[in-house]
Length: 391
Image (cartoon, rainbow, N blue to C red):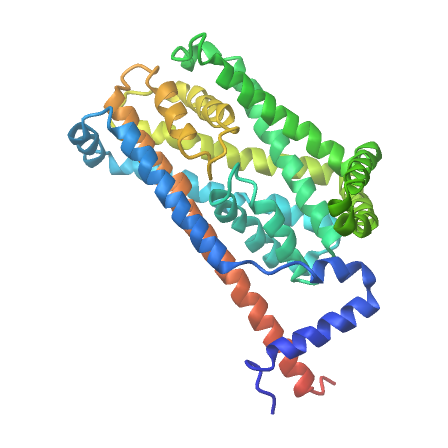
């Protein structure tokens, strides 16, 4: 009888060699480095440190007793609705990735796609510019024996769907700019312009990366020009053809998905619906703090939230920590009845449930995925060691 715990690594190496031999396209996915758990821990500590500094600075301008008092008197019914909105956002968020994976005929990977889709919040939350989620998702898909190129095409298309949805909210917010941006003056308006420009540029760049051969060739020429530098070319030259093949395969996968127009449109709508629930959370938080907000103000609050997040996408800290909190207090103090202490209390509650709580639940999703992968691997080994006659 095999010892599945101790034999796991040797069997995995054998599987890798066999898989590469039978399907060379998977070579790149097998060579990806596993997730560095020590690095994750260090990034979490950095997030906690930045958060502590941010909240200390922001709350130093307020009477902490007033902020604490506002938080203690929060209406639990409205706060419960805010948490329900967060729950609906979490449930709907990974469905776009599941929908796109079906277009790639990966129906049997529905649960994997759902768990992988939800891990995005954790890895985005601990990396600068919130950029860590997508590369990790590519790696996690390759662990389910999907090629790195197909995985990249899948994640890239899903990210484009998200960018289309978030840019739609951002553009709509500009039409209501006067309702909530009066605290931005001539010396700070550049922050808004920079955030919106980067958000739109990211959308265009990702679409080109997914579909445009010219961009792929441009990147290849850039790498070849770097190879002219002797110490760089020594290591990079041999990787350029591999990079070109990888990009070609990834674009082929992306174009295949984009060819399913209704699937992509469905992914955009799912992302838009999930974002709508996310952007509605501050409305119920402010109502819980006894701010008299009529229901017809809900769309304005949603757009104000989209505006605040888009404005600070350029902040290089994990999860935009520091910038997001400032934008929230600047924007929501423009609403009638929202004092600085209420805005600060609302900001603390909002970040608490939409960033820290969300990251925690997302981390649990990643752990569940790892447990599932390990369980499936052991099951495969058991079936190979003790084949069952299924006739």
